[in-house]
Amino acid sequence: MDRERHWKEVEQMILEMKNTSEIMVDLAYSALIFQDPGIAEEVLKLEEHMDELYTKFELKVLEILQKKSEEVEEEEVLGLLRLGVAAENIADAASRMAELVIGGVKAHPVLRYAIEETEETIMKIEVDERSPFAGVTVEDAEFDEKAGISIIAIRRGNKWFINPQANLKIEPGDVLITRGFKESKDVLESFIREKRSSRSS
Amino acid sequence: MGNKRITYKAIPVLELLKEMKDLSGLMIDLAYSAFLYNNKDLAKEVMRLEEKVDELCNLLLMTSALAVRDREDAEQMLAIMKTAISADEISNAAADIANLVFLGVVPHRAIVSAFLRAEKKVARIKVSKDSVLVGKKLGDLLLEARVGADVIAIRRGREWILDPDKDFEIRENDVIIARGTPEGVEELERIACGVVPSLPEVMKWTEKDTGKKLSR
Image 1 (cartoon, rainbow over the protein chains, first blue to last red):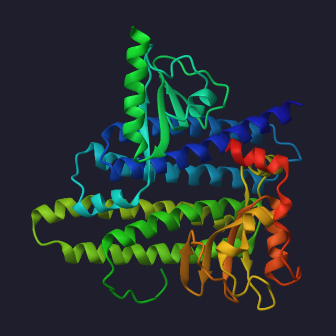
Image 2 (cartoon, one colour; image 1 turned 90 degrees about the horizontal axis):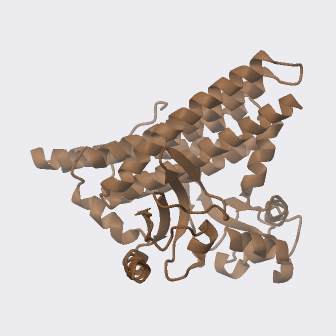
Image 3 (tube, chains in turn red, cyan; image 1 turned 30 degrees about the vertical axis):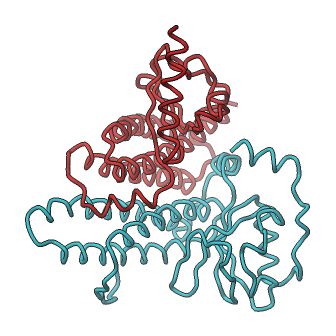
């Protein structure tokens, strides 16, 4: 029973590390191509989150090893650790890309040509009380066709929701990390503006 | 690394970088799948891709070095070179995961079940000369609709085609990287080796499948 619970936790942790590292890579490339320091900062915040996750994960694995019964094989534990290290390495590589954007290393003009070829873009939306997304669930925020977004992560202070659940309610103060088409960026911005003014009146 | 000679070829930096980005992304998917399914063939493909990314990285660094004429160029090229190195590191991490298969490291069943719930299966499928796939265009095959698995990449000898378009024609000995439901991928395997002589009807969508697709 107790062991079952341990494995469930490890399971969740490793999935979250994998997803976090992959989202970091997406965000880092987008930050680089669009020279967007806001997105780059989120990558570094995710890196902190990743470090915390990884430490917790190591502790958990050690705990499992301590209570080791005949059911756990060394190779299986090694597999776990290596998966964790790989996700960590991927996250590090993403942070180094993000640091380039924050460090003000000017990108070579060729990177600008990449923009034309990239259809998708990552956007960061800060939610305040008047935002159309405040108090709305993830599902409803994504459902609104005018907004045309897909939420890949939500940051609430230091807490992260990676691939958030459909029924999670968005709160004022949340930072949404969304994926959408390049063209939809302007549409989204005017959508937010329009809704804001109708909320305030 | 090995002792293969690195020869300079003039390929635009952007093209090299884009390919490195795409290939390293594909490698991550393949590597996790190779480890989870303890699949040596798939792990080998990851190793092949790793070599390819290494090669692209070397080419990119050489091309960048040649393109630098002054201090300003050098500063601007720095971001590109560092990005390429990061993509290379990502591909190394993927190779590390795939390499577990050769080291005899097995995934714990709890991990396997977690991933299987979260991910679709990825597999490497070789097309035999007897398969109905030979000579067909991807756009005409409607594989996603017929078998519930899609072609995400193809290796033809040493050449990699990512996200092949609908006019792409499958040839004998192509190596397909497919992603889909476990049953779909297995069905595609049978079709590709010629055991299943014809393609199933397009009607195969079940409500469950469409529901899944919409919710993604």
